[in-house]
Amino acid sequence: MTIVVADTGPLNYLHIIGQLEILPALYGEVLVPPAVLREMVHPHAPPGLRLVAQNPPPWFQVRTLGHV
Image (cartoon, rainbow, N blue to C red; front, side, top):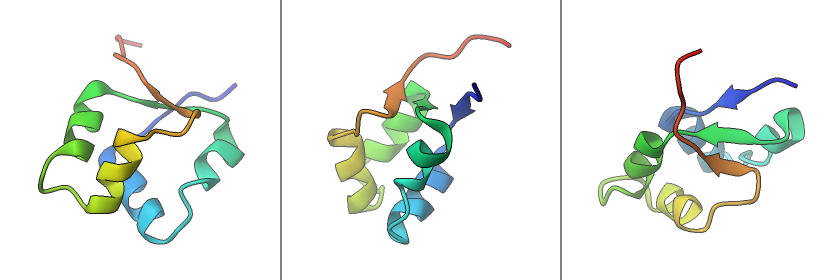
C-alpha cells in the first residue's frame, strides 16, 4: 500500500478544480499532518479548504508523522 502525505497546496488546488476525490480513488487514505490542518483552517485560507478541514471526509486522516 502506498502512503500519501498531503500538503496544503495539492489539497487546495484539487478542491478548486473539483477533483479532491481523486486522492482516495488513487490512494485509499491520505495522511495530513497537524501543521497542514492548521494551515487549512487559518482565517486566510480559502473558504472551501477551511470547509474541508472542518468536515473532513473519511479518507482524510490527520496524523502526526514520525521519521521514516
